[in-house]
Image (cartoon, rainbow, N blue to C red):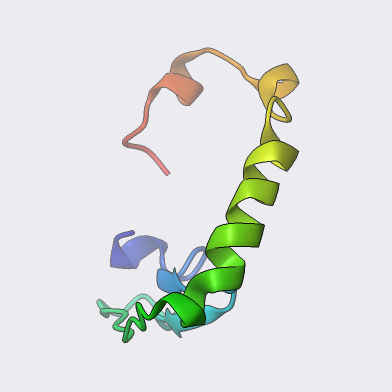
Length: 79
């Protein structure tokens, strides 16, 4: 996300457990979010073996009724 949108939607990195690992400030300044990644199997077991399959099943088709088409929806470069 570019800095001019940071006041509304600051960039960040979300850890496998769903918490923010790092987050940029919401003040319009260019900033980088940096986080260490612990890729040991025991550190991500719950997120990968339990959370990911549950989210995939829970979201299956949940957005289908809300899909729209049109100029604003088709422009993926606008915020």
